Amino acid sequence: MNSSRTRQQMWDTLGEPVDLLVIGGGINGAGIARDAARRGLKVALVEARDLAYGTSSRSSKLVHGGLRYLQQFEFSLVFEAVSERRILLDIAPHLVRPLGFLFPVYRDSPHNLLVLKAGMWLYEGLSLFRSPKRHRKLSVRDIATEEPALTREHLKGAPLYYDCSTDDARLTLESALDAIAHGATVATWTRALSFIKDEETGRIQGAVVKDMLGDGALKEIRAHAVINATGPWTDRTRALSAEPTTTLLRPTKGVHIVVDHHKLPVNNAVVCFHPDDKRVLFAIPWGEQTYIGTTDTDFSGDPGQVYADCNDVDYLLTAANDYFPEHPLTPDDVIATWAGLRPLIAPPRAPGSDISESEVSREHQIIIGEDGLITIAGGKLTTYRRMSAEVVETAIKFLRLADQLPEELHHPHTDTSPLPGAREWPEAESDEAAFNIVATRTLEASAEHLSEATAYFLAHTYGTRAPELAALVAEDPLLAEPICPDRPEILAQINWAIQRELAATLTDMLVQRTQIFYRAADQGRDAAPRVARHMAPLLGWDEATIAENIDRYLHDVDLSQRWRTEHQG
Image 1 (cartoon, rainbow, N blue to C red):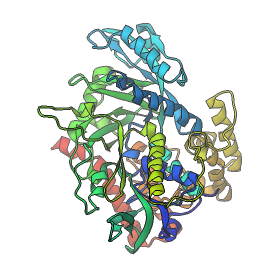
Image 2 (image 1 turned 60 degrees about the vertical axis):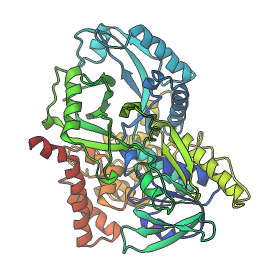
Image 3 (image 1 turned 120 degrees about the vertical axis):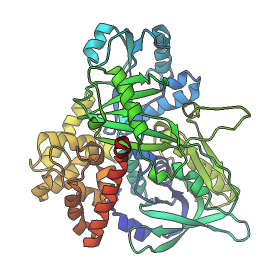
Image 4 (image 1 turned 180 degrees about the horizontal axis):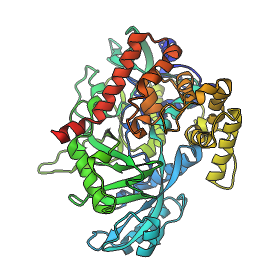
C-alpha cells in the first residue's frame, strides 16, 4: 500500500465517479474516508484548504474521556470516549501518549475529595480499568514534589489520573494517508462550489469543485452519496443546496495561549477552575512549551477568520496566575495563540431557556437532508473513529436503498489496524523503549548525519516512518539543517511533506505539517522566506508564488497576534 502521492497528483486524479464524496478534510472527514476506503468503497475527499486546517488542528490536543461529563451524568459519552482512547493508544502510539492530569482541590473548592475519589473509580470503571495508568490521591506534600509550581495555599489534596495528549493535525493527516493507501483520492485546496442534482428527483449526485491553487479549473465529481463533514462550515455547506435549511450549529470559540515551559513549569496537565466564572481549563506541558486553555464563548463570524482577542488572552492569564502565583505570566510571555471553533449542535430553544456555552452537549448527530446530503455535526476529537464508522454505515444504508452498493464490502478494521506511523511498531517492555528502537533505526537510516536528539524527535513525530524520512538525509546531508535556530525541525521534513503528505503551501508546512507556527519564538517569521524558497523547486513556484505564500503565512501569524494590537489600543 503506497500513499506517496503529491497534492497535484491527487487533483489530477479527481473527477472519476465515486461511491462517496466527502466534503471536509478535518478529523471526521479523514476518518470517514479511511473507514469507507477500507471497506472497499470508492472514495474522494475534497478540502477547501489543508487537512486539519480548522478545528482539527486547533483543539486542546487531548484524547480523553471527559471526566467533567460525569457531573452531567453523560455516562454513555464517557464510556464511548474512554473506549476510543484505548483504541487510539493501540493504533497510534506515536501520536497518542499518556498524560497525567492533576485535579487540585482547595478549601473553597466546590469539589469534595471523597466525591472525586469515587468519581475516579467510576471513570476507570467505565474504561474497564484500561486507563493508561491507575489514578492516585496526592497529599499536599506529594503535590509539592509532583507539581511544585502550583500554589499550595489552602490546598487540601489532589487526585492524579491519566488521559492522553495527541498531535491533532497529524492524527488527521495519518487517517487521510491511510485512506489514500486504501484507494481514496484526497484533494486539498479543492473547494466544493455547488451540488450536482438529479433534475427529476432533486437528489444530490455529486459536486462541482474548484482548484484553489492552480488556474482555478473546475471539475465535476459524480457520487452516489455526498457527505458533509465541514465542521464549523457545516451550515454553509448545507446552504449550497437549494433546499431551505435551518441553522444546525451553535459554534463556540476555544482559545489557547502558548508560553515557554520555564515560564510556567508544569509536569502534568493541571485542571484549573477560572476564579471568575469557575469554568474548567487546563495548563498542559508541551515539551519546551506549556499551553493554557481553553475558553468557551459563542461565535457567529467567519470560521476562517477566528482569532484570539485580548479578552481571551487576559482570561487565560488570569487563571494561570491564580493557580501559579510564583510564576506570574504577562502578555509579553505569550509566544503564540490558536483559536478553534467547536461545531456544537444547537440545543432546542425552549421558552425562557438560557443554556451557557459550556452546557451545550458534545454529542454528535448524523442528518440526511431531503436531497440526500449526509451531514455529520458535533462530537469530540476522541470519538472521531466511531463517529466516522456511523457515518459510513449510514451512507451504506443509503446506497443500498438506491441499489448502488458495490457487490463486495470488507470489514474496515479501523479499531485494530495501525495508522501509517504505527505499522510494524516494535514490541518493547515500555513506550520509551519502543521509541528508543525507532529512534535508533532513524539514526542509522540517516547514515549518522542526524543527532540522537533529532532522531528521537522524528521518531515521536513520524513513528515508524521516521527512518524513511531519515534516508533523505543520507542522500543529501544538507537536509539535516534545522528549519529554525534552536528548533528540532529539519529541511528533510519539507521534502517529505511535499512528496508524501500532500503539503502544497507554506502555511501547510509551518502550521499543519510542523508546529513551528506555535512553538518558534517568532512563529517562523524569519524562516518563512527560506522555507518558501526551499519549497519552490519542489512545487514549481515562480517568484510571484513564493511572495504570495510568504504573505499568506505572515497574515496568519499576524491574525494569531492581533490580540496584541487590541491590548495595546
